[in-house]
Amino acid sequence: MGCTTTIQKDGTMMHTNEINRLDISEAVARQREYYQSGRTYAATERRTHLKALLDVIKRYEPKIIEALRHDLNKGEFEAYTTEIGILYEEIRFSMKRIDRWMRPKRVRTSRIHLGAKSWIVPEPYGTVLIVAPWNYPFQLAISPLIGAIAAGNTAILKPSELTPHVSALLAQLIRETFAPEHVRVIEGGVETNTELLRQKFDHIFFTGSVAVGRIVMEAAAKQLIPVTLELGGKSPCIVHHDANIELAAKRIAFGKFTNAGQTCVAPDYLFVHTSIKDELLAALRRTIEEFYGCEPLRHPDYGRIVSRRHFDRLAGFLCDGTIVTGGQIDAEKLQIAPTILEDIHVESPVMQEEIFGPVLPLLTYDMIEEVITAVNARPKPLALYLFTQDSNVEDQVVKCISYGGGCINDTLMHVASPYLPFGGVGESGVGSYHGKSSFDTFTHYKSILKQTTLFDFSFRYPSSKIGLSLIRKLLK
Image (cartoon, rainbow, N blue to C red; front, side, top):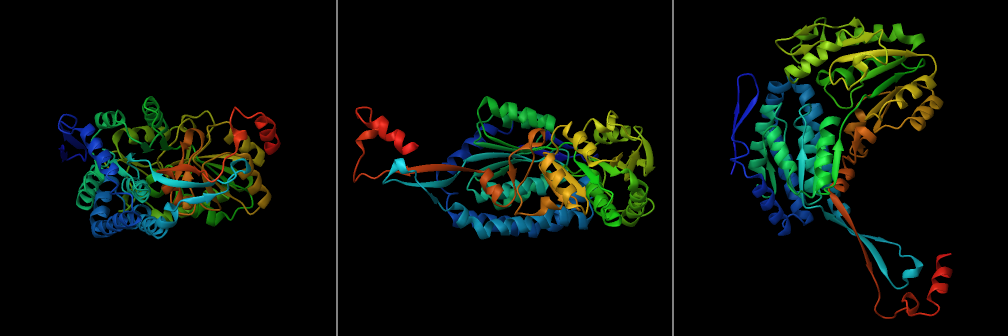
């Protein structure tokens, strides 16, 4: 059971009779049977499989870096730090804590249940679907899989067809490490996604755009399948007048232009205090040159845009304002230089959708309240970044704006901590993961009350004459 995958000269992936030759429903049924056999339940089994996953990633590390270079022109430094190294920490973090996470938890019992004991039992959902995106195609496929395995599930992993080399490598890597009834990669395009969403999974984990997230949630709702949606949105970056300008410039450029801006939590637009705009722009120009040289499009490790469609969309944004720095494009290589735009208005096309590329619009403000009002007028973002030394401004922004998560005086780094749940709110996502939150995402917490048989209270039954009055007294 399988499909033939061929990587074409243009880097795209062709699947021969992907639906006819791959009986997806059978694959799901076999995983469900494997789960019900109990072979994924024990903590020792979960640790063993996580250790096997860790070992195979280490063994495949050079090939992973090579595949990321082919698909997105990621250099070794960026590939390791954003796609591979972060997974090593996540796996080790989970392996050390599985026993504690799995342990049933005793909880208090209310006084109307005298004689009873109560506890909560973590149990796996069962068979889960993980749909991964193309921007961090290895990390964002494996990271949720770590949680699924740690929680004792079987999993079907669907990588993105837009990164064919990573997709094919994922299929090979997983095939060598897991029985297909336990973890399996199913490659393909839109038809495969559609067929997968017709299946009766116990949980769906999706990372991608808001538009596709709506489709996933609608399909899941028809079968009442719980979902985790890691989406996106326009994540603001606020630079207050008291910020450390040089440090802010480095951390903003790092957050925005890593992976050529194709990061769901990248700063999507800048709100800069009027008094420091020119100073910050000068620092950003210097930083971009320091990171990528005078001609970023010639830098061997500067990323490329994933597809022609995305490239054309991003190139269109270059006309939405005045180019302060950057603006160069290479249509053949699908590259756009790190670009900053000013003279932007909130109605500009570049401000109407998530950019997801190396184009950074800049707006100015005089009072922090202006920023709070402007951000709150939009859907809740996945991330927010604030550069300031003023704890009052920090408190005001954190309390008055709803967003998934973020950083004070940095960008992106909250995503790399297994101690911090990562996820969106509102249109930017449903649910969270990383560390213990990944285990929780793929776990059902079953509540148990065990009542004593040594005695019984007759007042609980409808035949009692004084039952109602006693219950009222107990509940006051």
